[in-house]
Structure formats: structure tokens, C-alpha cells
Image (tube, rainbow, N blue to C red):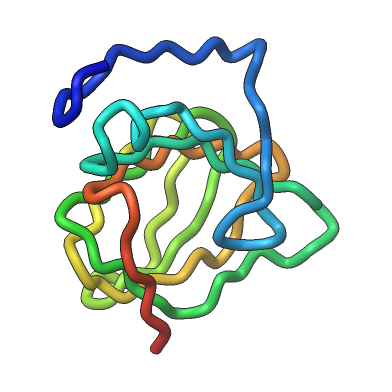
Length: 127
């Protein structure tokens, strides 16, 4: 790989590695996009690590240039400042503008979300 260039990457679902991440009750499978784009973007799949825990995240915001969520399976309910409660299920997608306060209120035990952000690393602020 040449310095300053993005690189090709492929991740196979059957070889996914799940790790704890931003929140202890979720697992994250990194899709290799942060490394391939030298931190310009990130993409990972998020799922519930422990269904017995309440998955309410509390009001917070992410300082990003771009953040979108695509529901791969299951269902979830979120609250967004200025929008109220939003229910999503498999196949639904939403975009979170920079700094919008939000809260994950509920996620089904089988919920899996694809999250894509820019930049790959960003600040999270609490209300």
C-alpha cells in the first residue's frame, strides 16, 4: 500500500469478529473501512451482546460529518431531538445530522444495525 492511498478490503460475514465497543452491552464487528480509508470513514455492524440488559443509551450526540444507520435485522426505537420517537425495522435507514441529540430507547434481541460514519473516529457528547 502506498502512503496516502486508500486500499481495497473485503470482510466475510462467516469470519466476523465481534468485540465490545463504545457501549458495553453491544458488540461491534468492524468492517475494515476505517483502516482502508485511513480513518476517513468507518463502518461496523452493531448487535446486542446481552439481551438481559436494558439497552437505553441515554441522550447523546456524535460530532460527525456523516452518520447513517441501516437496520439489517430486527427492530429498534430511537428518540431524536426535534423529531420525537422513531421506530425502525429490517430494511429501514436513517441519517443523523452532525450533533443531533438522540437516544436508543429499545432494540429487539435480534437487532443488527449497520453504521457508517465520517470521520472514522468521532467525539460523543452527553446531554
